[in-house]
Length: 138
Image 1 (cartoon, rainbow, N blue to C red):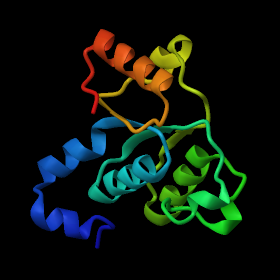
Image 2 (cartoon, rainbow, N blue to C red; image 1 turned 90 degrees about the vertical axis):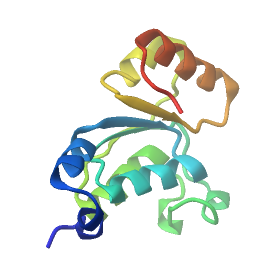
Image 3 (tube, one colour; image 1 turned 60 degrees about the vertical axis):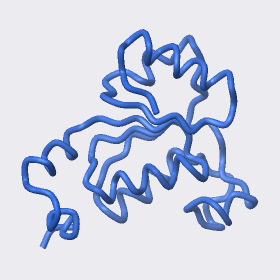
Image 4 (cartoon, rainbow, N blue to C red; image 1 turned 180 degrees about the vertical axis):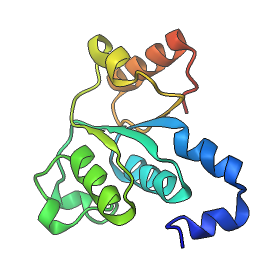
């Protein structure tokens, strides 16, 4: 039985193949970004990248899928590790600040970008980069 058994009940093999090979970048691994990344991975997306410069704080634990033992660690790395442990999905975690100078590199090879950053400068850099590359950005 596949780890994606429930998804395969409702999606044909061609759709599952598209999801598996569709590269999505999630900008932000906080409450919204971490939960979206986890949902994408559990839905069959296997080409995931997550970018977040922040470390896990105790106050994050009530809204984000992290544990007390994770406090102090980088969100992107812990999220990537947790999804690999749970599902075998290799998430490319980047613990970096996304700025205009590195946006092209960090967002490279994305077919879609989901922006959940909580600061306007990073959001603008994502928007500008996606617009220039004609990559859909949510």
